[in-house]
Length: 366
Image 1 (cartoon, rainbow, N blue to C red):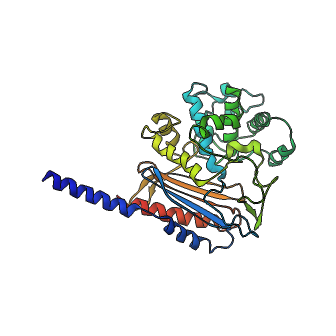
Image 2: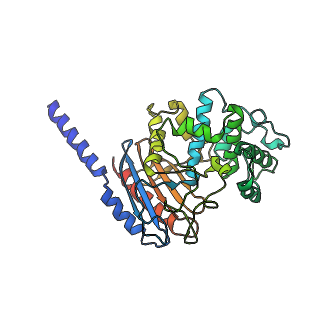
């Protein structure tokens, strides 16, 4: 009798697993439909199931005016989706005793001219967009850093000082107000505490432990390129100035390498991550206050209506690319979608359709 029950259970499990499978051919068909929107030269999608990449596909061309097809090996710019990587770096430094979640900004970064409203802001406030900071500091000065020969860490410290001298746009530690400045200030704190550049820290603390190949140089002709008003961009001006990396500039990588980070984020909650303790991952992924904003992630718990599941989500763009990710860590499932088109195109809409369709299919598998 027990053997029959076990056999029936295995049959049901096998059936459910089969229903959950998605193939590369199916993903190619979805991409072909999405790429009927001619404003998007290329897109890619990767599906994670049961904690492992299950299938991926790309479609389209590397650059408008070129016949070269996009490939699975190409690197995509993920914009602010890299904020989760910055937050993970900070969490690593906290667990190493080099930083503290509870220490106030007046101790972590005692800069002259800091407004009193920011004195008690914490790293968690900065990384969850709850520090009351404006989205960016002076954008003309951000652009001017391209020609500034000084070390990037010096430029970041100057940025932090300037941002912290500006009036808050809202009350601290209440609702989330999206701010790149919070991540720039957090990076300046990390650089001050360790004596290392943000770039060195990311390589040593995040990319290398996960075996990720990340290209932080500007894209060149012949590679997959972002687009502005339908024209491909390469070299200088094809990305946000490199000193802005902590907020989501410079990170280009293949979907496979991005998935290594995403798989680790989910596995970490089950004690199988390579970067943090289970409590560290849980802290990163927990909404701060009632904001729905975690550290480098947005949290959604009421979708889809018929089978709600906890999702970690984020979108990223430097204006010339688009990337979107949704994870269901309780199920160890997720979807990431990338495109080499940004503002003024249908990339974001097409990506959202793909993610919602694939995540809805995941939610149906009980």
